[in-house]
Image 1 (tube, rainbow, N blue to C red):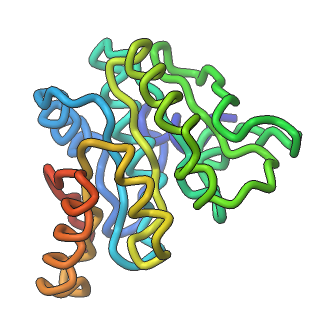
Image 2: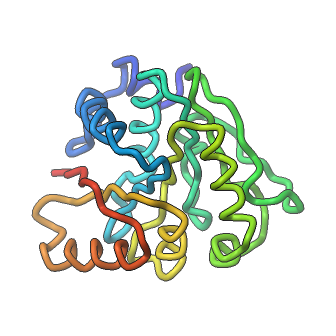
Length: 202
């Protein structure tokens, strides 16, 4: 049985209303790839907007362009990337939280899942090893993509943004107000993370 992300790529997955099609994501990914910085986060304003699926689609689309991509689970409280790839989350609580890099079904696309570490997200993003890992990944991969929690989840997403250079906002059309979008953009850019685009959902 194919994983949900495989179904999306190969055309067998019937998408729910309002979710970005993979053809649209290939176009978005091609625009992202024209940017020079290599570390990007995908986030939303309130939660519950398929951020993990959109980040996974973007990573897959870039890998299909021949790029070497690392997709990182940035939502440590409610991880879901493993579900999109039908992969088991590592359960070792003593393992360092940013070391579980695994290959996926798609050549060129690796994934770093959230393991069973009991470290708080805020402590992970504040640790010196976070920046060290990001620097190491940049030497290995053409693009690093974080699937991040929503900006409404608190300071942890802002700390994660400090380790990224660019962001894509997932926006729900007719529900996210312009003022909320503007505040989200300002919050990310204060963290040194430039908003380079948005993915709109109906």
